[in-house]
Amino acid sequence: MTAPAVDTDRLALVIDEILHQHPAAGLAVAVVGPDGLRFFRAVGVSDSAQGTPVTEHTVFRIGSISKTFTAIAVMQLRDRGLLDLDDPVSSHLGSVRLTPACGWFRPVTIRQLLTHTSGIGELRNLADLFRPTIGLAIGAGQPVPPLSAYYRGGLRVEVEPGSKWAYANHGFAVLGQLVEDVSGEPFGAYMRAHVLGPLGMEHTDFARTDPIARQLATGYMLRRRGLKAVKDREIVVQPAGSVFAPAADMARYAAALLRGGGDVLKPETLSEMFQPQYQADPRIPGIALCFWLGDVGGHRTAGHGGGWPGFISALTVAPDDGVAVLAFTNTGTPVPGQVSDALLREVLGVAADQPRLDIPEHPQVWAGLCGWYGLAPGRLTNARPRMLIGAGAEVFVRDGHLMLRAFTPEPRLRRGYRLHAADPDDPYFFRLDLTADDLGTWPVAFRDDDDGGAGTTLHMGPTPISLYRRPDYRNPARLAAAAAGAAATAAAVQAARRRFR
Image 1 (cartoon, helix red, strand yellow):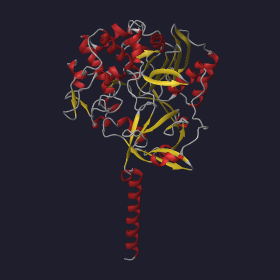
Image 2: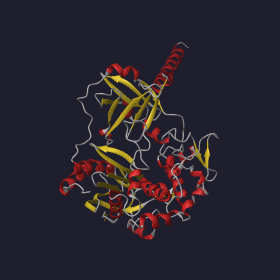
Image 3: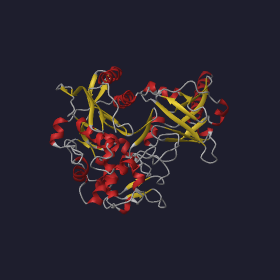
């Protein structure tokens, strides 16, 4: 496989253009081929107080990209015949207990944990909303508790396994415990011996070692008055997001993925990890075994992003084209995702993603789509989509166009966005233009799950959010308007009473 040519000057210009719009304390970007690094650019500082520049050896917290390493360890154990992906995970666990909300739930399988369809939510319980980083963090320097203690009393399975997609850091924490219990080795030791070590990632670890601490960037948030360092914390669910890594090591990892798994996986196993496992709708990109799937101008991609307070990361691999892009920053900013997408498009010669305006609309079907849509039941499994859409979403017509808006405090989301027709042969498939919010364009698909028509279910990406048609009397907008009207009437009556006293 030959990686496409790289115009280093053009790539540097693209990075500068993005940073001009979205400043960051520091940024490390790499374009990688099967043989290793093809392009590297470091910008800014890893520590603003010291003026320390970012280099390829600067250590970043890569957040949820850590999950891909944990998934590789699980697949290694599968290939050794020690487990099957469709095994109930509890049959291999000795330290963590899964507790179903209802006793008749089917057992959670390993495959469901790898695809975030296990029924486990973003929170252990609602009290996590009031804990640092939704209960995932403890103070820097404190000993990380074992997962058996962290999940003392059991980890709740809120909804029927396999019935719903819900991103779950806790699910990948369970997978890390699975690796430890099945292999008989401590999780961190297993990862160093069987994944990080064979890949030559000598300066990467799930724990903050002394050598890592000396190269670790400081995490920042960008405020009106400049950079503000975030409070440094440790992550408890280490298998889900605790990896510390420099760009140089991550380039080795990306190259191994392009070579079919390097020295840690069989090529056919890595190929399996890049195959779709869950799709809310065939028209929406889905998730493979941990890796997110995508399409960039007809080029197949797989990857993962990551975030931790003060750090954002992105990894995107185009396996058929022999190229990968990495981007890491020590600032809470969308820059890594934007840079990763823009540079991959430059290398592949693909135009920026924009909704097409030449596809005819089909207003004759809109009546069946308009209405109020809400999430499936589940307070813990709905925590992440609630951050985006709040109480739900409404599809409506304005100025001759189909629109979608969310019921959140964010004004732009409340005003709504146009749904652009995306397929001349499919009147129920659209693109949502979120480029003004630095989120690109999202596919939106309507489907009736009962009779094959359209109008009862709304699926949108890139993460598979599913919303279900609800009766109008449950529409939050109508309820709010009714409440406001009742309040106004009560105020008017009270004022009239005061006047006639």
